[in-house]
Length: 423
Ligand SMILES: Nc1ccn([C@@H]2O[C@H](COP(=O)(O)OP(=O)(O)OP(=O)(O)O)[C@@H](O)[C@H]2O)c(=O)n1
Ligand SMILES: [Mg+2]
Image (cartoon, rainbow, N blue to C red; front, top):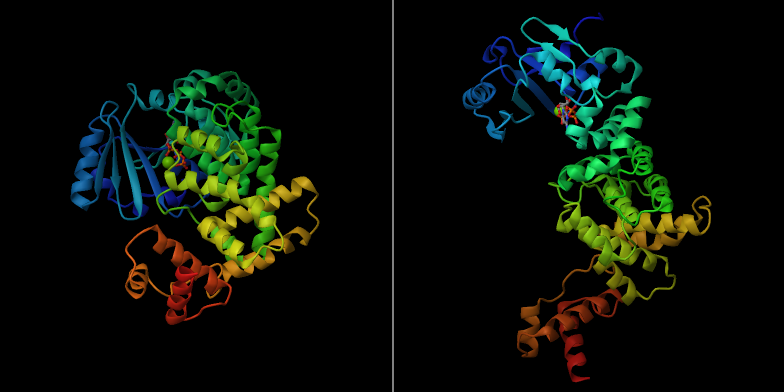
């Protein structure tokens, strides 16, 4: 049917030996699809279908290789083996034969199997032909309905693979859009996360919005909200060109464990209600973490303050203290807002933020990155005062005075606090 099987599928590249798999056993899903596309991935994520004893096989492999073992779904008999640089899922075949299993999957390009014992490709749904045309074609409307997360997966995979959605599949998705709410919000959040993470995702989340898949989660999003997403990408590029360090920060994750980059935070801020309190509820419903919600609401609260010119050092100090690590995302939001007010004319509007950005990127800048001259404890001893909120207030005033260049040593700081108390 088509050329030779790509070597990336070969068991030599697996984290375990082929001998551990019974006959027959099949590799399926994304790994087969990507290998046929010539796509390489940094992290191997393999899926196997085994007619019987899938969990037993997984357990034996995990034990032998001292890898992690997770029983993902006891009912459908799916288990995961976690190796240091790869993950392998082992699922009991659905139905009496492999064809039935493949017919229950989401898209034809994800329903191609590879038999590692015979090196055969099994492609009853002509997924390979769709791969060549770079098309996501549903296996059936019923399958989309059976797991409506697949509606969102279509946009996410189109974005990741650079594919388009085949027209009949597109109509089916539209007709089933209201079913998306039957899916756990957490699963939807993961797909949305992928779409917000990179510029390739932007046209596809816009499309998902037009097809009514986003409205259940971002009830207040308007056309303008979606238009802002592309402006975020543009603003991020502009910032990156001028301050590469800020660009790197935008690509970083909020926390290592969550999948939202700072760029994603800026985009979320465009989709939620502009009132931080309403935004918080929307994001909670989508199961975003507290750190992510705080990041979005902070950016929403503070972006317009970045625009203020002639801010005193004191005001700047408090701004930096409040914005913290959300700075880069907040500058992006401010730039996007400028664009909406007046067409972004080159670096003109960027210049407004340059002084703040320079402070932020300079670790020795005492306005953006204050150091502590004296601790609360030292202050309590030196001034002979008890622990109380007053100590915190004095420490803040010392930091502001340091930012203003009024004090620069512990002794001066203590003396300054002393005067404040007496005055
Ligand atoms: N809701 C879902 C999730 C998965 N699958 C099937 O299970 C395979 C593996 O799922 P997953 O790893 O989630 O997706 P991949 O297609 O492998 O894509 P990715 O590149 O994101 O891993 C898919 O290819 C597809 O055949 C499905 O039919 N419906
Ligand atoms: Mg996969």
